[in-house]
Length: 241
Image (cartoon, rainbow, N blue to C red; front, top):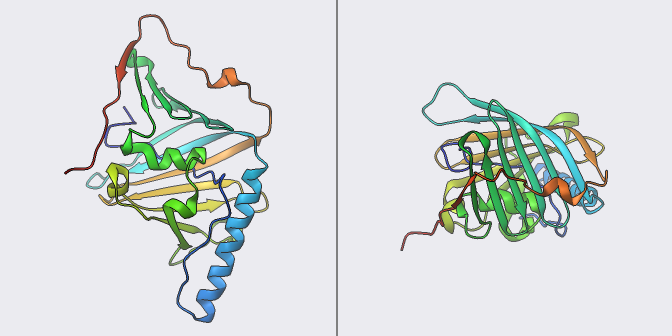
């Protein structure tokens, strides 16, 4: 299962909170320019998603596992609706459906005839990216935001954002090193998200065919299961004592 196997779920960062301040950099001209660009990207990103009531998109995921030569690829569709509704469907090469309603999470794998149920706040291994996707945590509360080193620019020359977790608590805090975020020019919707783990694993998500404010019905986010599907309670992760 993509959720708890070596490939952890990673998702697009949808910033629905307040404007995110960024840390101060070295006081030289280049750093000040980069800092100004970062603030502008965050401002435009925030303005876009504040106006977004619902969103659907196609996604392509490429995950590189440390120690393995071949990357794992998959594609699917994602649906989001305020407040707190998410449907994430893997379609190829295998089917897996993830539904989130506020704090309730369901992961359904038709091939296994099994659905995993749990609470977002208890499923620490996937808590951070899901919180970001649903806007449950403001970026400035959970992350330091800074310009991405090196090339540092995406499509259209727009500055990439690097998000560094402030907290190392829980499985997610210990495993996630940084997130690199790219936006589309003009619209400032999320184009790519790259999750870098401490282990060296890297998961990249690219989004396309975005449609916003199309009036997604609540029924889109309701998981309908066959009668003979086994329900399994998700494990609860906790930090070692």
